[in-house]
Length: 200
Length: 365
Ligand SMILES: Nc1ncnc2c1ncn2[C@@H]1O[C@H](COP(=O)(O)OP(=O)(O)O)[C@@H](O)[C@H]1O
Ligand SMILES: [Mg+2]
Ligand SMILES: [Zn+2]
Image 1: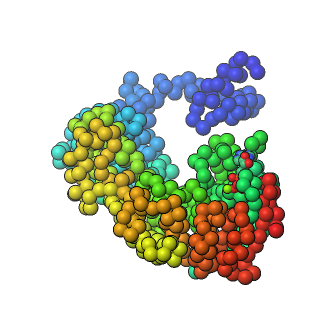
Image 2 (image 1 turned 90 degrees about the vertical axis):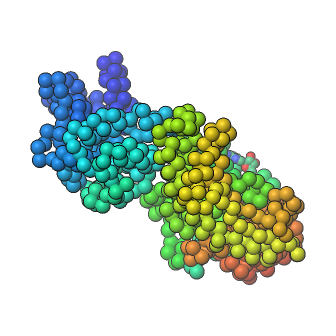
Image 3 (image 1 turned 120 degrees about the vertical axis):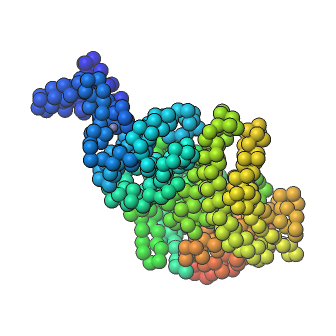
C-alpha cells in the first residue's frame, strides 16, 4: 500500500465507528468514484474548523463570523429567551430539535457528573450557566440530561444550584428509556417527554 | 401452568463435548457417566442456552473447547405448545443470543426468557457463603416478577460506587455528595421494595420445601434482613451520619448492598450450625422454592438442572428430592455417576429418558 493511502486510512480510522477495513474502503471509493466527491469533501474539511465552532452562548454548532461563533437557535429571534433547556451533549440538542417541540433555547454542559470518570461539580460550566440565566432573564430551566445515573445526579445538582436563582427547574418526563440515550429517542417520544416535564 | 421444555439440543465446540444432537423428554432426563466425562458440561451448555451465562464461571471463553474458535448451543424450545428456536454463540469478545433468529432486547431480558434453575455442587455456597449469592437469588426472583428490577439493581450499584468515589477523592464536603446520596436513597428504596416482595414469596416456599426434603425434626426459617433502615428519611440520615466512617472503611455501612436472606435452622443461623448435609438440604430447598415462585410469577415450570445429586445427598434424601420433583412436573435434566440410585425415585413412568455420557459423547442408553 502506498504511504499516502496508508496515511489516509489511518486518519479515517480515527473517526468513531470506522475501523481500518472501512477506512480502506472509503479511500478506494474516493479514488475511484467521481472526482468531484473527494475534491468537495477536501475543500469542506479544510475550511471546517475556520467556519464552524461551538456557539459561544450555548455550545451548539455555530457559524463563525468575525471570530465569533453563534448557532442558528441563538440567533433565531422567534425563540423564547426565558425558556432554557440544559443538555449534556450537542447530540442531545439535535435530537430535541428534530422533535421540533422546543420553543426555547439551549445550554450544552459538555459533560455529566461522573465521579467514576473523575468528573466533579467543578468540571461543569455552572458559572457560565448561571451567567446565561441572569443575562437572559430565564424563568424556566428544563433539564434534559439522559436518564442514566450520571444524568440524574447532574439533574439533582442543577436543581440545587439553580434553585436559589428563583427559576423554575423541571426535568423532562422519563418517556426515554432508563439508562438510555437521548440521541436515539424518536421525535414523538421526545416531544412527549418535553410536554410531560415535571417540576424538580 | 403451561409446559416448558427443550425438545432437542445441539452443541458444537463446547468444552469436551463432541458435536451433539439429542432429543429430550418432557419429564426426567437422566445423564449417567463416570467422573470427568462431560455431564456437568452438558448441563452448563443447557444453562448457557437458557440464560447466556454459566453457573460455573464468569469467564465464558472457558466454555469454548480447547483448540476451537467458537462454541454454539442451539435448541428447539416448546412453551405452551409454541416452538421457538434459541441459540447462544460464544467466541472471543462476543456473545450472541438469538430467539428465532432475532436478537433479544438485552441479554438480561434473554436470561429470564427461558426459566431454568440449576443445582450443582458449587451452589452449596448459597447456604455456607456470604450474603452476595443470596442477594443474587432474590434479585433473580424479583426479575422474573418484574423486568424493571434490573434498572434498579444497576442504578443502585453505580450510585453506590459513585458516592464512595466522591467521599474518597473529594471528601465529605463535596458539593455533589447530597445528590449521589439522593440517588442512592431513590434506587435503594426501589431495590429494597423489590427484594422485600421477592423474599415474601420465596421465604414460605423455602420453609415448606425444607419440611419436605430436610432431615426429620429440623425446621428452617427464612427472612429478609435489610442492610439499612426502613424509610427514605432514615436511610438518608444514616448515610449522612456515616460519611466519615464510610470514607475511612472505604465502603458504605448501610444500604441494600448489605441485605441478606437470613437462614435459620431450629432458630440458629445456618452458617454456624449446619452440617454439610444440612447445608445441601437448605440449598435444595432454596432451589425448589425458586421453581415454585418462578412458576407462579410466569405460569410456567422452570427447567431444572440437577448436577451430581447422588454424590451430594444420601439415599433417603435423594429419594425425597425426586419425589418432591415429580410433584413439580417440569422438565428435569439430571446427572449422576450412579444411575442405579435413581431407580428408587418414583419417577413418573414413561416420562424418563436415559443417556450415557462417555468421553464427551452422549448416547441414548
Ligand atoms: N474448554 C474445554 N475444552 C475441552 N475440554 C474441556 C474444556 N473445559 C473442560 N474440559 C474437560 O471436560 C472434562 C470435565 O467434564 P465435566 O462435565 O466437568 O465432567 P463430569 O462428567 O464429571 O461432570 C474434563 O476432562 C475437562 O478437561
Ligand atoms: Mg460434574
Ligand atoms: Zn447557540
